[in-house]
Amino acid sequence: MNLSFIEFHSTSLFARGLLLLSLIALTSSSGRGDDPYQAARDRLVRERVESAGVKDPRVLQSIRSTPRHEFVPSKLQDRAYFDMALPIGESQTISSPFIVALMTEALDPKPTDKVLEIGTGSGYQAAVLSPLVKEVYSIEIVRDLGERAAEVLESLDYKNVSTRVGDGFLGWPEAAPFDKIIVTCSPESVPKPLVEQLREGGVMIIPVGERYQQTLYLMTKKDGELLRQPLRPTLFVPMTGEAEDNRQLLPDAANPKVVNGDFETAASGDAANIPDYVPGWYYGRQVRRVADDGAAVQGAAFVRFSNETPGLGSHLLQGFPIDGRKVSTIRLSGKARTGEVRRGPEGDAMPMIALSLYDGQRRDLGTFRLGPFRGSRPWRSSSRLIRIPPSAREAILRIGLFGATGTADFDEIEVEKID
Image (tube, rainbow, N blue to C red; front, side):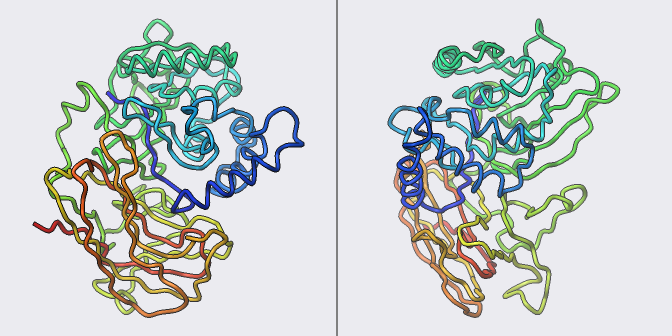
């Protein structure tokens, strides 16, 4: 299993603007005591976490005070307080601060809680939980990551965090039962040992689903069974080991495609109550599916992004596998319509359709764009051919306003393999 979490969510599309903001924040922190990163953390919480809907003051304070830069490789410390995932080695990443805050708030941590975390990764999630609960037990299957995280947590004096290297889906029987369990990998179903080790009335936060189509659930144990409440669509890295090898449904990396790119599929059941939820897509911000035969460019539905605050995120994302050894060229296409769009505070804060490619270690191989789409314009089609490098293994598709203000509608988003 891969017990680390990757989240390609970004409140700004490209790192240039983020880097500038971070450097400004760090420079302005010179008069704020001994911690040169405090201003960057304050800005992160204010502009990227609290504004996105996390409200618990204890969780916000923990994000504000946890030194995330200590949990990332030294060469990436200048990006530590971006709201984005960062590689930490072994094909793993550290989760974005927003997702850590979201999952922590959903867990509803209490000072008396004993919490089991499946997937130590960098140790950052355990560090955020530490001041909020009584005890944290954290398991990592990748030995190098687990040992490194244990050293960092110990050096930073997180005394109530216990770590071990092992198969997290087997749990930690000798420390059970647990009041809360937080899982940062995505099985097809909930492992039985974790259900058994969760106390009656306890809560579990876990993403469940196919490799690139998952939903984050809040599950409560009642009469030995788990009651499910969907929170939002999400994307976790593929796991390693037996659980991943035994998946029944696997994506086709030789034939990449967009799921629900025409937006004709609507949410149903409990998922219909999730804000900004569009089936097949995840991490929606300020977006809604519009079902209007007269307004859609084709079919009966499209998605609309609306934003009145410059710099505030408004977007949808979707991940899919793409094997550069089997796919040499694709055509990215889509339709867009805009209304009174104005550029946001960052240079690339404009509506667009963008595709980012990553290799097997999740290193960035480049981003390719349709747009930007400015001002007010009717429906218009755009497309381009993209050469796929042989090292490509994953892609992230992004659509939205990305910090611009106004409205932007999108429809017929497609990726076509060109033989």
